[in-house]
Amino acid sequence: MRRRRVPIAIVLVAVIIVGVISWLRTRPLEVPTPFVTQGRLQVYSLDVGQGDSALIITPEGKSVLIDAGPPQAGDEVVAALRKRNISSLDLAVATHPHADHIGGMRQVIENFEVKNFLDSGQIYPSNEYERLLRAIKEKGIKFIEAKKGMTFDLDSGVKLVTLNPQGGGEWITKVRAGGSVENANSVVIRLSYGNFSMLFTGDAETETEQLMMKSGEPLRAQVLKVGHHGSRYATSVKFLEAVSPEVAIISCGAGNRYGHPAQVTLERLQQAGAKIYRTDLNGEIAIVTDGNKFEVHAAKQPVQVALWSGSAGVLACMLLAIALSSKLGGRDGRRSQRRRI
Ligand SMILES: [Zn+2]
Image (cartoon, rainbow, N blue to C red; front, side, top):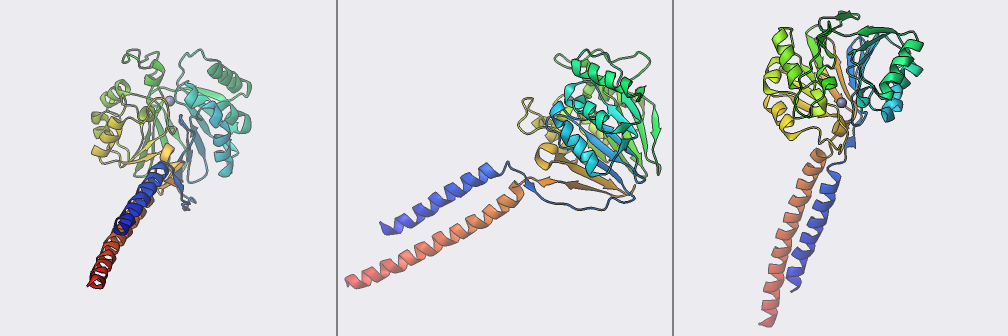
């Protein structure tokens, strides 16, 4: 009887440990990742929850903000800019007028000098968007309506080229059932610096991807900011072939109600050979490049890697304990047998 109790206790402990690990594995672990920024191009995918916001800082200190997350992320975006000693933005971009992209933008405009504002130019009657347009006008910010083929030369040869919307009154109006015209007409930007390039696709889905592929514009990019928070309706296999990304960044909120990112999109990215980073798991994600090589630094590491390797060790120890206890039990047995004799 006593011999059996030891393994049962060990099994109980194992069950508790596995339970705790399964609970912990969804919680990210903060890992500080210091890196050199001086004289390099930096791109930060900010941790804004369910939304999108990316900050570009050029080697000579020019700055561009693409989207500003949902309204509740305004403080986060302002803090991210302050942390990098930014006092003015050379360009702010609203890829499209949905709240999860422009929500924090008014706060940005109120806190920083914005020199130019690039907008998709769509008519969208929301209070949030109308208030933003009014604020841009009141501050006298230069308002630029985006259309494909625009080039913004920053410094050190850093360049932004717009690939969408089409411009000249041409809009994508046919979208899938349940799709969004605003998403389809997102401003899409290709950033390039030396041999490095990165694609920012806003919430564009397949119909926009097809149009961009048809245009013949270069789409290849080492880093892809994945379209529409990793929705299943974006990031088609053909588009991934054209972009051929080494790294994919998905901006989404933990446990969001849209189910972003879709499993099928994650699989397509994996099959394309892209290493996936997600703001819901990795927090803020930084890309740093000298125009040749690039590095990715995530603020948080998903905890399962450390925990699963730790748990493997724990399980190995437990197996050893079981083996030892049964050996000891065996010896006890022999002793008691001897006593009986
Ligand atoms: Zn969105």
